Image 1: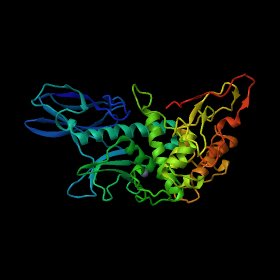
Image 2 (image 1 turned 90 degrees about the vertical axis):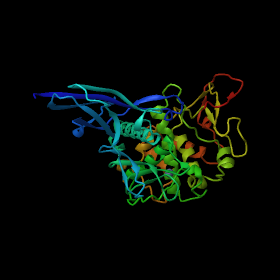
Image 3 (image 1 turned 90 degrees about the horizontal axis):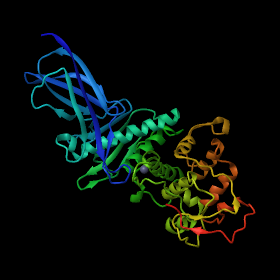
Image 4 (image 1 turned 120 degrees about the horizontal axis):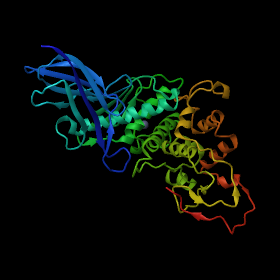
Length: 431
Ligand SMILES: [Zn+2]
């Protein structure tokens, strides 16, 4: 029988409703997925090789074979050179692999040589493995991981990870907590029995730890020193400065990335998170000094939101004694009678840049994640030295704004512009 060129095409998507927080189902293209095509005639399947989905989730595989009718079966794996989504092996805790997931099978032999299997979507209610809850979550983890890796490298080659990262879900972690292991370069999402910690924000928190391991100087052996999420009170109120920084940074980065990458979508609830008032720092977080703030996960997280706050001079932070109407967030104030400096308008991408060594600015090494001298105050100082958008005076103001014992307001840096007004108006902060 003569040979013909068979062409097998299709598309892979995942439908999810959790990434942008809206609860609305959204279909996402699955890019970079390995698709294996298997063909059968006379009842036995043989592999025709693999293809990869493109940025829109489409794949094509061509193969020269005879014209006889065949059945096709297609399997997908969430694995490539930069990311792998794994599952645990029940019989061997500690062993993980990236399963081949069946996404299509003919129920009878069909004529070729053009085979289009259409769109196969991982979604609730789909038959077979496409509808399996944990498989759908692994598809979401793949989409989130690939989107993040691309965004990082598109912004700056320095932001790339140092190697492949892995996500293991479900992972039965001995401590009962999700964590990131810098040696295996794996994120473990704990799920065992009735406990299931799957959550997109937690996933990004843990991946941020791996990013931090890859962009640090001096600490190489990150053997799961850090457990998460911090909301579960795994850390003491007062802990070593670099651990608090590491945790606070991971929490900050997870929310900033959700906002940056998915905050513009219709009905997204991934809004920018805000810094705290001094009253909230002192009374809610119980941070009585800047020293204590540096040693608190939550304190560091709120301090970092100040660094990327897009509205500095129209906010009032109050003092530790007086609860503002907008508490725990700073209050919006109207400032038409004042000439204020330009706010720094830093973004998460600027914050990530602070980790890079910059000998010319007096910082010859990358951020030293494990060094006890490296806390959030030092991070602000380093940011002012390496980022063009943050000057010394503004940095000093930011340090005062995270000091529970200060009472300086951003408006103190503004000058009257001669416009007559009866007073500074107050309105609740925009959230
Ligand atoms: Zn953590």
